[in-house]
Structures are given as structure tokens and as C-alpha cells.
Length: 257
Image (cartoon, rainbow, N blue to C red; front, top):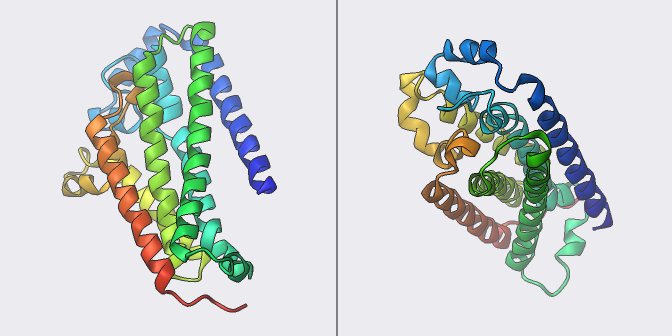
């Protein structure tokens, strides 16, 4: 537990430092007509993929959507969530510690729920740190952020992260393989990201957009705000995944090292 606290502090400091770095660059490109003209030449689907949206990339929300929310911040959250989810069950089983953990007079399903709650707390803390950093840096660098849209953007990102973290936990309860618990959710996250961003550019991907949690929460969240109904859909999917994890944990024999 102490190791996880230290890791969470390190993750939080790293995310806060990265947000600071990105925000500090903004004044140097603010109101750059040349950059706006370059972005205007991009096809609309690519603008959506990079989070440029309908606004200007030289505005605070447009810049942060492109430089922070389109890739790097989701990547940080997903790496944290999937890593924690894979370690929570499959990792302990690989290390030979899970039998001891489950020897306590607690049902396996309750143990899985506790691990799921821990994953959700880690993701929520990191997203809350990012939200606090943006709120503090907004007046310093003149980012002109909308508080409600910023909060909804981080909420949507947290829900997407929790979904993939719980998916890693579920895979770990189904099979005794930490590698699969890491790889499958990571592959689904990568596929969902590409489908959510490129479904308009590649028409054959369009029918699959509903399978992407990134599509449900929406693009360019600082400019448009996250889709509230989409966040609810992704949250419901996450709860279904966690319920599956509790059922699988009750039925599976543990691997003996």
C-alpha cells in the first residue's frame, strides 16, 4: 500500500509538471495568425482527431485540447489505470501473493470490488490534480478556460480511464496472465482512440464508432465540453465490466506458483 501511495504521488507530480510545461508554452503562440492559417488547411476529420475543434488552436482551450487532451493526458491516465488493473489481480497471482490475500474471511467478489475502488481512486486523484493545475494556471498564462467544460473534460477522461482499468482487472480475474491483462485493454484503448478520431475520415470505421469510449465522451472537450450522456454510457459500461470481474473471480481456480 505504501508503494502505491508513493507511485500515486509521483504520477500526480508528473502530470502536474506536464500540464505546467504545456501551459507555459501557450503565451508564445497566442494569437499566431500563421498557425491558425496552417490549421485551417487541415481536413476536418484530422482536426477532430487532434482536438482542434471549431475554435482556434491559438486560443487557450483550442491549444490545450490539441496539445494535452487529444493524446498525452489520456495516455497518462490509461497507462496508470491499465497498469493498476493488471497488477491488482493477475499481477498478485503471478507473484504468488493472491492466495494469501484471498485467505482472509472475505468473499472474492468483495476483494475484487475493493481493488476496483482503489483503481478508481487512483485515476480520480490524477485527474483531480490535472483539474487543479489547470485552474491555477489559467489566470497565470491567460488560458481563458471555462470552468464547467474543464471539469467535464476531466470527468470524461476519468471515466474512460476507470473503464480500461476495470477491464484490465476483469481480464486478470479471468486468466492468470498479467501480460494479457495489460495487452488486451491497451489494444482496445488504442483501437477505440483511432476509431473515435478517424471514423469520419475512413467511412468503413463509422459503424464501429459506438464501440469507442472516446467517441462517447466527445472530442475537443475544453471547447465543447464532454457529452454528459456519453459519460453516463461509458460509466455504465465500466460498472458492467466490474460486475463481470466479481463473477469471474468467484468461479476461477487460482494458479499455484
